[in-house]
View 1 (spheres, rainbow, N blue to C red):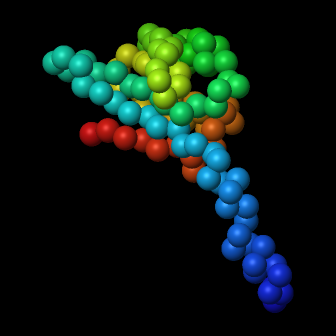
View 2 (view 1 turned 90 degrees about the vertical axis):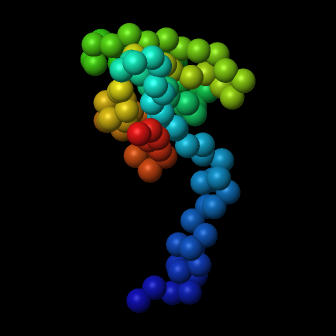
Length: 105
């Protein structure tokens, strides 16, 4: 049986720390015709996005770039790579699964 202190500790569980963690948004945007672009936004500033992009491009045989945006740096990949990039980020422990949000059609 848990004491009242343990229950209180489990309920609070550092709420301010959870608010400071940003979510990673993975979106797919329609270009022209059947072409689409996958964007990854919200990755931590201390990560080397160019190195991550290099490995993603080799693993999934796609092209991509890092774009400077007012909301931070964004990774753009050719094609619908939502599932692949989500799996990549969780397998290599870059971002926990509960912080990834996949948008799109």
